[in-house]
Image 1: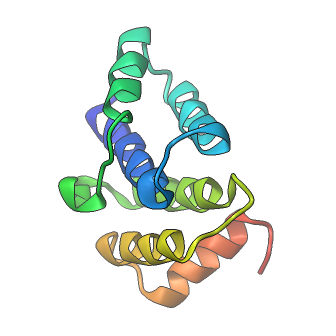
Image 2: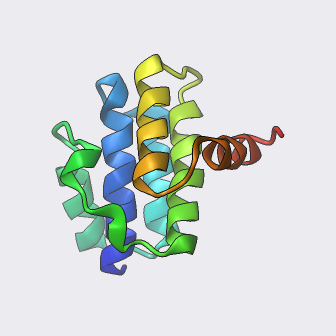
Length: 120
């Protein structure tokens, strides 16, 4: 797992904390990405431990992500906030903040999210 892949997972964990917990379907999205990134057992344990306390996007430097990594993060973020069947206002606001941090305008972010959710 690369440092930037780890950063993507950390950003998803921070997003998951928007509703006050990282569990159930949200944790499954994180675990799926860890598997997709072929994380070692040690890397998984490190990130699961990191996820045990509240995290914020502001704590992460997402500026090092390239375009494909930004797309990966935004797509998985959209999946994550919809995973538990409830999208809170805090989650939507944080997703908007993520798009802004990633240098996307609101319309590009909306299209990416709708595409991820199978809507247009």
